[in-house]
Length: 211
Image 1 (cartoon, helix red, strand yellow):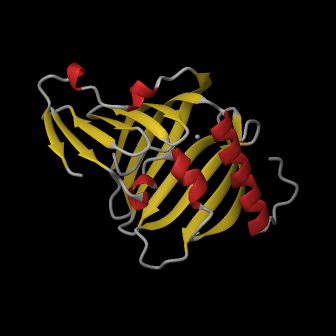
Image 2 (cartoon, helix red, strand yellow; image 1 turned 180 degrees about the vertical axis):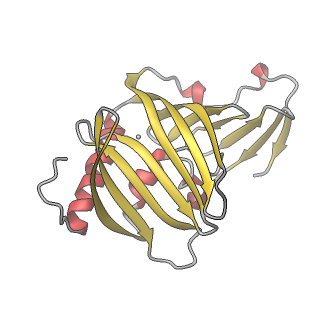
């Protein structure tokens, strides 16, 4: 999960938009995300491998602000303060500390995903689709590098708000992770401390520093 998420949150005039139009949509989505202030989002994540019919599904909650985040799922909590990441595994009460690079963040951080199109990805407009009470605009990102760990990313953007609503990441092994936002609140007052692991709250946790 900690390599998945994340992460993660225009008016269309033609069904034959070119790459420049797709880039404009993502630029608007990135601006909307950056202007949203603190975000609290509930989500459901479905993971499935192309060689299996089994789907692993769970719910989670994310707190997001610029490039910082806290993600809570049933078996783990991840904090990222813009530089350092802490991953707390509930089962064995273990905390791994690291400084993730861009390749790791692209699987976790909505901020990174919404800006990753600027370098190394081909953009394709996939059209609009109705999801619940929303109309989503979908953009597909495919890496130029054939040896990339990512096969493709599909970002679904709420047409009425420009805020991301779904992110589907397929990696080179055939694993597809589909994250869907079920509830989202913007303008939430989030302190900087929420994005940092506090040892006092987990006195029995074993700390493993991987930096």
